[in-house]
Length: 256
Image (cartoon, rainbow, N blue to C red; front, side):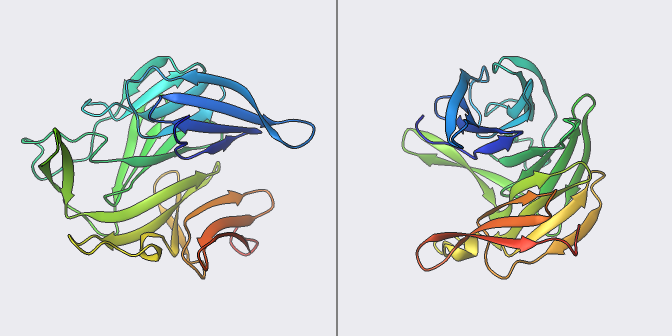
């Protein structure tokens, strides 16, 4: 692997995805509680910036840049099953077609594999998909961002730059009843990049699978990433403190 993007746990297995190689490694613990490589495969999708294991038999990823479909469904060996979904609107979509570079998103799913949720990193959009039906609901808020996309030359190519530019939603976790997503809502000013701590959240937004807001959780420090032990009702989070990463935990007994 060159670099692992967003390692994820499914059942007792750890999935690591390298977008540069289009490669997935699957690890699981042995009797000594050490993770060992159990399987590996390449995804058939030409390029993707996000991969998520929905079940051992089915995976989903963002479709290749430039395609008009939002999601690609894969079998257990990375072969394409189907593609689905369109893109949120932009103010100049007749000039520049939206794709997964513009609406780069993190992905999670319900434990029964029926529902899939996407959280856009650069806009305040959440999308809920039914595995069989397709897009069920698209939610925008709390900022109501309306994007214009600019194509800017860079070396021998170009990049798509949204205007205005924001850091909004981050990683998602889900159970059968609800999903939680980190939220920053920081506007990026040209020439004034946000500090390291400003790029991370002190809020976690919680929704049910119909897209209804349930609550906002506010940890007492900026959270880089998080996960939830739903059975023991514990929130685990990674924070940056004194030039080092630390894992902290919060009891959710009064929330769940």
